[in-house]
Image (cartoon, rainbow, N blue to C red):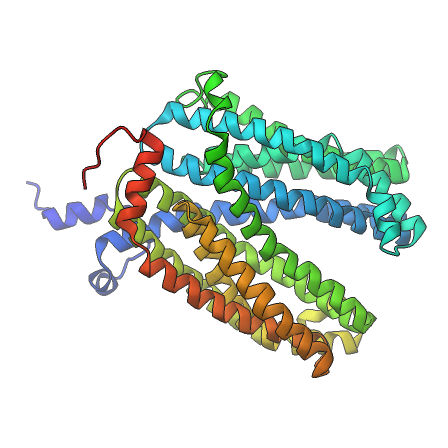
Length: 483
């Protein structure tokens, strides 16, 4: 005789029950929010792992090229900075695909998903041309900025070798967007694992076995990017992940470029405004001396690693919000926004506690100089709070990205970073003589303001209107809307 109650059966069928074993906790949190949290965490874990694995590719190359001498290491650093400019702009253009694919897939218009991917590929491949124009002029640009001629020459060699990898870099970003916004997360992690293994082997063969030196390091840098793109493509073909959405190349991909660019341009601005402020901080710290520059670099490295956690939540939020809006589920989009912001705050608090408890020793990971370690500890006092607000900003950008509101995010980022953060930070650095601590205090003020603006915008947003706009954009304006 089956004596199980309907409540017991529902609980056993609810996957979120794996997270909430305590019955009293389940009573406090409504089922729909528990389920939403479960879905976000299931996506966030692989996304964070993928970001970390992607970060390891240049990290391994840095380890190998560092053995070739300080000039080679400096040249690679300059080359990476130049390449990152193209990566930021190209990555911003690719973010439009995240918005469109997540919404279109949520609306079950699977054929249109493939068309959006084709359109994105064509636009990003055309964008390779100005990227190549910038990269092939790296040496004269660096000399114009007063860099060491030998460092500029080595940087030029790296970027010339990297030219074939630019399309691979953009295509990989689009492949990730294509899968991720359909809720398929694990393949990018598998491809990153395979690429990291192949990257270590390639660097060892070219530098240690064949002893190709600088040329081998430059070639390995290029091949690493090709690896991750090709491996992900092969996995997609192998598992036939494209079958439902890819109907072959179509002339429809040559249409609606204006609509794509209306999302792509503010997406690029949103990303670049966020990215560039930290590059500017490094430049300003360099003006203060080696001690401040070294401490700034150490904290930046910690910030990059810590940022991967809210970045994973950002990706999950973008997908879930876009899918919900595409399906006409306004309440689902709002629910995702609430849960993802709560997750971001919780993760940031945990990260802050870890950093605060290790601030006096964590600097020894980067240097044995006691003065630098002491300054890193001092900077972490501020950064522990900055990363809380920065995490909220990051996830808020994902929510607005999924809803197609990139313009709002771009405006808030520009206003926060360059009208509040940068002027305040530079004033505190130089006029108030707080040195590099002043820059982080400026970031603290601006991220606090930004996160407040973002949260206010998200909860004051007319979500019903946004849902209607998404409906018309993915199905055509000729259809009527039913609330």
